[in-house]
Length: 455
Image (tube, rainbow, N blue to C red):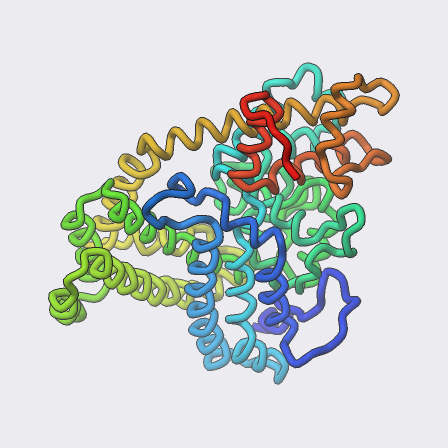
């Protein structure tokens, strides 16, 4: 398959770089790790409220774990490709030495565009514009308006990683096109959303990044499905990033719920043991023997969590390999974990369905989760109401309190000479980039709930 020699590139979205001992893809990983956008993930909600007396995952720890799983997948798939397909020397080296770096880097930044308070933050941004349609929609084109009323963390990730903010270096983090293509789960613009199709369930780039995304797609040989509206098939590496994410949150959310006492230890142990047995019956007796030697309850669950993730990783890679050619041709249409779940030859479907049902009923609808989501929705909505109306007015027409509100926004997010759309996107950059704590603190201060001097 000659396309295997073209779906990756070590070119960057901005090429003003000097060489060093690291590969281009290793430099991607390091740039993400040291970026402020990645660092802020440590104070963004994954599922459970932060902080707490019991350690649970935040967006940063989740991303690190997804990256670890993705690296393993990249290693296994790279070995598969080099052993089964005719490759150029350069491509052989890529699949042998670098694919795992691309997947781990992409996994590391897959959530980097998510606003504070999880999905409720996304909902708050989208709903703000939807609720103010009459007064706001006339400022924007149809495609721009679709971006705003469907605000999406995946599209925001591409923006964060590639855009140049005022006073910042050109090209964002200047990652390779391969890494950027690997996080594009929904490679279409917002007006092309179609929930019935996996690759169009959401959208992957804002109008402001349309040209950038098309360049990414061309550089990595993504298959174009439509040019109006713009729709591409998923890049083959996306499936691995998605699977690593699906595996981690499916398993680790249950582990966190056990630490918090939401699920009984014995029930959690049973779920994980059943999953291990369904995926690899030959290992279950050895697993039980090892488990008996561990007395600490949290360590017992941690051991089973590790076994579950490892087996799901191996199974996902098997499914990827079995469907590899249809994936590369853009014909594959089902998430890898859903393929595993839908198999009827063993108990895996039953166990994964039970885990998902439990998570939906007892974790994602737990009172503490609902409280933080509702609070976060209100916080984000109020912040937008402070900044969006004044930024849409010409400077000369702003009232005194509106000018003061915009003085709270750092200059790097103010595009006073841009279009209305560019101005609003700058405000969304500021608000969506906030951590849970920062957004809450700013909300309390501008509402007068907490008044004091901050140095």
